[in-house]
Amino acid sequence: MTRDEALFQGLVRLGDNTLIIGHRVSEWCGHSPVLEEDIALANIALDMIGQTQLWLGLASEIEGEGRDADKLAFHRDAWDFRNLLLCEMPNGDFGRTMMRQFLFDAWHSIYLGRLLKSSDTRVAAIAEKASKEVAYHLERSADTVVALGDGTAESHDRMQAALDYLYPYVGEMFLSDEGDAVLAEAGIAPDPASLREEYDALVGRVLDKATLSVPENRYAQKGGRTGAMHTEHLGHLLAQMQWLQRAYPDATW
Amino acid sequence: MSRTVRQPSVEQIWGWLDAVPDPEIPVISLVDLGIIRDVAWDGDRLVITVTPTYSGCPATSIINLDIETVLRRHGIERLELKRQLSPAWTTDWLSDKGRARLEDYGIAPPQPAGGPDRCPRCHGRNVERLSQFGSTPCKAQWRCTDCLEPFDYFKCI
Image 1 (cartoon, rainbow over the protein chains, first blue to last red):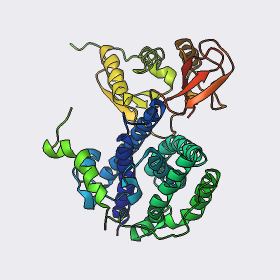
Image 2 (cartoon, each protein chain N blue to C red):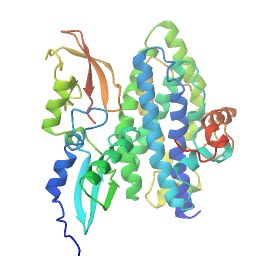
Image 3 (tube, chains in turn purple, green):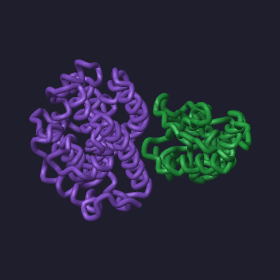
């Protein structure tokens, strides 16, 4: 795998993560339990879509085949997506959405922190921009996980159930492959496996405060970031997200 | 016969841009907001360097359009708008004039402490946070426990 191929794949992975979880979060718009939460979720979705434009925009530049960020987002099918499976998991109740967000934000903030030192200045510049936004996302999702985990008996049980349900999708964040090795070698991006310790410490601290127990089983569902096997949920998400561009290709406002 | 048009000075152009209101908070200008990073002539081409506030801020494209409109109106023919991501925008770049205008408008200006200094309406010091997020990406929602009014806070980034 050449350096450009690895970089393209790495950028698509980052852009697909933010695109897919951003779309999931946007599904709450107009449906959240209270107005403040609705506004916060819509803002987070907006940040995610903005970051997607930057990552997929740079991916398009690297590929150099005229597929711009919109084409990458709307003209690919499920098997070409490279997001973590966690990002495509359905929202469930509000607690599960916030748990998914927290598990993602914690990884996202650590990963972006490493990208600040990327040898590729374009990657470092996007990471610099995105990490400021993600600091707010993490502050909020961690606060909410603590408030609900250490809340009523009902909210505690729901948050524990959400953690048990989502935890098998955490391990995929730390799997490394050939592309990661090429990027790590070139100093462009960190080896994903090297983030686990910091992640476990951060997540452990918050979950402890939230009176929730981290599942012991480290079995990891995988296949999202390699594209080998997405969950059945991604196709349904894409059917909604890509509908307009598929029905009316290249339609513009 | 050709007519010689004198090239407007960079200071003159900064002045024009300082008259362009932010599309979402029109009491402050784009210059007050600190997103115009550079104004320079490259021969007969004017290059304006702009940095986005938030990566997904929907006002970004309107801002570029507004910059172009005002400069075209002043007779600028060759124009390039350059996007610059790094250094990332920070609320430290808000001008003092901008901060004062925000407060007059009812939006508490950003503070290094991470929360508003006082209520922009009654100037009471007892304030509490309602949400880290607000009606635009750059704002959070707070409430004054003296006058009980909710207000926007321009959050630090």
